[in-house]
Amino acid sequence: MRAECTYVKIFKYHESLDAFVVTDKYKDLANRLDIGEWNPVVWIGRFFALDNDYGEHWFDNWDEREAISAKAKKQGLEQEEVMIIRPTSFKNGYDGPCRSDEQRKRFWTDVLKSLRLSLDTLFNEARANYREDPDKTVKHYSKLELTIKQIKKEYKVSD
Image (cartoon, rainbow, N blue to C red):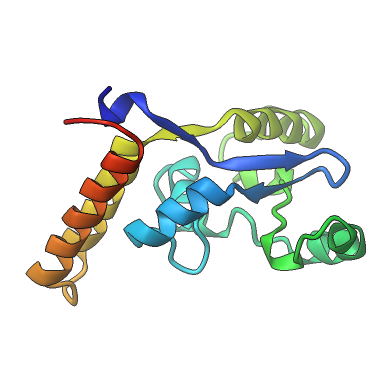
């Protein structure tokens, strides 16, 4: 099986909170591949925001998190890991909006419930990060390639 055929679920939805958390499997891969920044899904948000840095803020919703923090705590979740879709984060007012906040929230909730990314996409993102970072050395890149090889072995995928 090729790595591109192996997909990893990114989020787990908690219906009682109407919120998401990053899956343990994806979080582990993001950490090992060093694509997490301060949050393992920052880079994904940039794609959702027309490949723009604004997208890194797609889950900057601390007021909403605070409102459900006690309920989340009862479910064993820390406030920092709970991610809530704020529909206003998915509009820019440039030529619209074309949908109501309610419809936008429903749509993005469905998208994130089903979001899976291939190992190849994760590997390519990790490699791109190393190419773009002047502080990363050949030694770092070699370590990344060893990590990718190990992940492929764990997931039983070949080139």
